[in-house]
Amino acid sequence: MRIHFLGPVISIFLIVACKNDKQKQESETWHTKKVALENETHNQLLDIEKEQGWELLFDGKTLNGWHLYNAPGADLAWEVKNGELYCNAKDESKQQGDLVTDKAYENYELILEWKISSRGNSGIFINVQEKPELGAAWQSGPEYQILDPDHMDHDVAVKKSGCLYAFSPQENEADTKSGQWNQTRIKQVDGKVEFYLNGTLTAVQDFTTPEWQEKVAATHFKNHPEFGKYTQGKIALQDWYFEVWFRNIKIREL
Picture 1 (tube, rainbow, N blue to C red):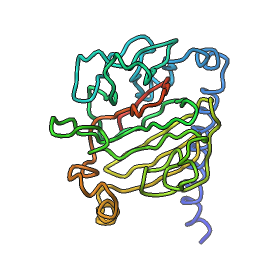
Picture 2: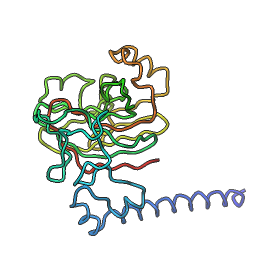
Picture 3: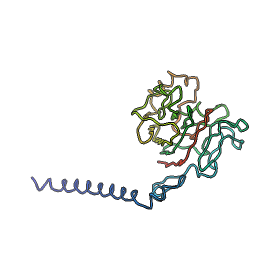
Picture 4: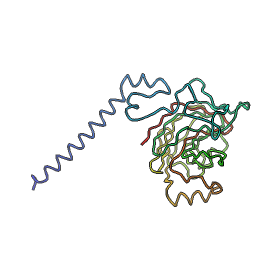
């Protein structure tokens, strides 16, 4: 009987060994001096990221790939400053509004870094539909909340940074400090989304379920029939009267 079980045991051992070797190789690939030096420069992809299918959404020099929501070609308040994508919310001579990608995305992983002004408020919208009859990105796209710790709404559970705005408190506690850079990660596959703040999972939602529609119906978003209906769309950065900065914006389609 022992002989009969020997084959499966060896197979399992080989599978585990191969998996461990792969994880070790990936770790060794990342933990090199070359990668460390490359990572000192913002808004660029490492060689390993290129191999994994990552693409830059912001080149650190231009607004290529982005435009003002429902106003392509506008003289907008968004600009590139010191290699950062900056919302100059104080410049009333420029057209204000949300900055949206030229391209729509469905299944993807998005990573970026952001910094918000004191007492500031902003966000990242996903599955945004750009239509003339929709006045803003939030009327169709659910929001990854960005909120400074000193903002008056910071203690509202469903408005903390990393939340699916207005729908659920943080899955796991994660906070930020004023004036510091933070990392956001958003992953969506077939309408199932995960939000991360500084490496911590903060929100999970399936946009394809009746439960989601019930949640929408219980909020003010029920008055906006296009909201939360889609599992694909554009990505938008919110201009909400406060200065906000973004950098190292990269995406990988899955």
